[in-house]
Amino acid sequence: MNDSARTPPARDGAATAPAAGSVARRALQHGPTLLLAVVVALLWFSPSFASAATLTRAAILVVFTIAAWAFGFFAEPIASLVFFLLAVVFRIAAPPVVFSGFASPAWWLVFGGSIIGMAVNISGLGERLAALVFGRASGSYLSAVSAVAIVAVGLAFIMPSTAGRIILLTPIVLAFADRLGLTPGRPGRIGLVMTLAAASYMPTSSILPANVPNTVLLGAADTLYGIKLAYGPYLLLHFPVLGALKMAAIVWLVCRVYPEPGKLALTSAASGRAWSRRERGLAVLLLASLILFATDFWHGVSPAWVALGAGILCLMPGADLVPVKSFAERLNIVTLLYVAGFLGVGAVVADSGLGAVVSDGMLRIAGLTPGHTTTNLATLAVIDAGIGLLTTLSGLPAVLTPLAKHFATASGLPLEVVLMLQVPVFSTVFLPYQSPPMMIGMQLGGVTLRQGARLCLPLAAITVLLLLPLDYLWWRVLGYLP
Image (cartoon, rainbow, N blue to C red; front, side, top):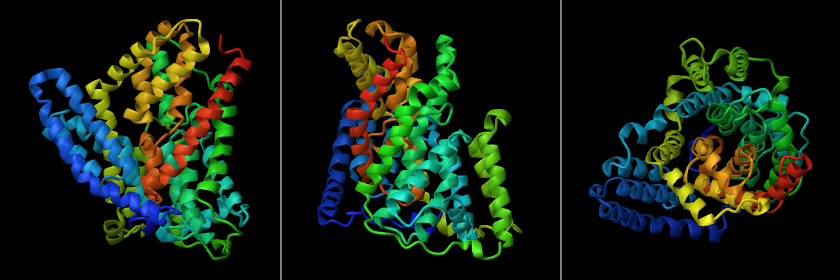
């Protein structure tokens, strides 16, 4: 990870626009007032109201935390710290649940990946790998964005961990940005990081088992209903629209949201110089890590522990990859607190039963009628998306799959269709906090939530208005819908 990831990034592209700055200042000014209102509301719903009060307090805190992240009510990383404090003080969940993010493999994946990123940056291997991986990309911005998107999606076919792919590729993409002259704060640098983050997660939801949500869906569908999802049919059903077209939409939108007009100055590659001992050692370590990442289904070791092990090796005396002083100076505590925060929010939503209560209430209001396939599909998608806004998308299948049979009965749709309907939902990100892997990539790449939302919101609109109708039409062509 480079220095840009540990310094407060500039506001987005037009990130320096006065209007954007004034919005950010207004949000920061309202933060303390909103926090006071939340504390008063939490005091009002005292524990004497038992489970109903606990559920209400959980809803208040979760909505406030999500809004604080989305609209920037506080400077980083105050929102996460406020969430931890209020959740424990008001006994919304037990401390092991609130702080479960720190014990999560995802947190340790980021920790280990941060050390690997430092090693790639310090050794100069990032520049060499950028030339190797993206060497065919021309000096045009469109070519650079397309190359990053293709590599991000292509790697998903051999490496099942989204966060692992992002950890591996982020320092390489940042080195590629440096070669293109895209310095920290430039719209194009933000665009390349967002391309990596979005393309690593959204299109790969259509590849089984390339990310956490479809892996959870795979296991839950088999465990609860005996439905076994196969690689080929899953890919055919989802990849043409949610994979290929979604990737094209990301490339097109990135070039417009974070524009870099004109030809970029592509500097000379590092391949002309001899490999140093540090580069050779780190290259062997990265190759071994990649093999272990890609074969975790066989050896059973989580990518988190692979990344942590590789990070420890980078710190070992004699390896000379990351000096302890550099580790202490460059470790990005803001990123780690972010990761622990949004993982903790997801854990509180699951522990409190908030997701199930909201989905059940929305289902009652919806009034599904068997026989109205299109209306029922749209309604169920809205319900699923509503739950996704309250929790991370990684945990969405764990909440929705147990409810799938109830949804199928109410709508008259086949159970397998209701299960597959989760895929368009958890592959659609309205705001970055919903996707932990995207948040990891953004934080490591020095991109703020507000900058990331500039891509996610219009991309979600394109998905809802264009890609989802095309996806359901594709399902009909395949004979999947009644």
